Amino acid sequence: MEQISDTPALRSRIAEWRGAGERIAFVPTMGNLHAGHLRLVQRGRELAPRCVVSIFVNPLQFGEGEDFGAYPRTLAADAEALRQAGADLLYTPTVEGLYPRGQAAQTRVEVPGLSDILCGASRPGHFVGVATVVCKLFNLVQPDVAVFGEKDYQQLLVIRRMTEDLCLPVEIVGVETVREPDGLALSSRNGYLTADERRAAPRLYQVLREVAEGLERGAPISQLESSGKAALEAAGLAPDYLTVRRASDLATPASGDEALVVLGAAWLGKARLIDNLQVRRTC
Image 1: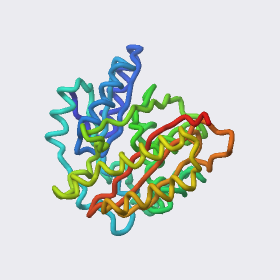
Image 2 (image 1 turned 180 degrees about the vertical axis):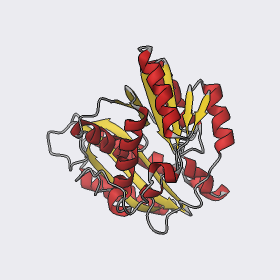
Image 3 (image 1 turned 90 degrees about the vertical axis):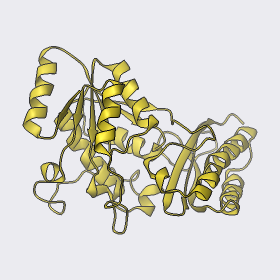
């Protein structure tokens, strides 16, 4: 596996692969990799003969008081894991390389509507930072297909909408959330959990399942949302939101909508946990 940090070297390698007619898959990450990330790499290798992974802790998507400085950086271990997973190239740009004029002067990409709700309401500007950096990375790597985890469901929809609206020639593929045996969705921020918090953390997934089962039975959405939030609070989690939305665009479901998604975010100590479950309502 080759590791590249500067743009000319990256463009040269991409041009070489393009000249040979090879498809390129891309997996953008912020590092501190776990089995969920490696599943994305595996899927990328299934979709194309070349797989590029980026590691970049993007300051533009962190708000004031968030954990940009403390976000775990484990480049050596990540590179070894990617090597074993069969990645062809690890791209590790610097902040100065991606934002040479500084963050304040950076041209930004915004996906209206989708970016302002749920996690976007709790983290103003977050999805502008995500869309901006992903757009830049797509232009640099020029992939045929890019792979993202469904755990960050809102992020996945933001990126899909951005790609469609800007006519970028990249196929966006989502991969099912990878979980611990007790159901907790894998996340780099799970490392913030204390032992007691780790035991309580799977309750988020359990509550999402209970809400999804209620939807399948035809229970009222407002009732399920209210009881779900109460269940999280009873388990010691501080809900940010727990809501049922239309799966295609995160709008409030209408009576005839069948494809839904239950989304939850909750604080547990220093960790902000997010998760979701897609469900089909037939009642």
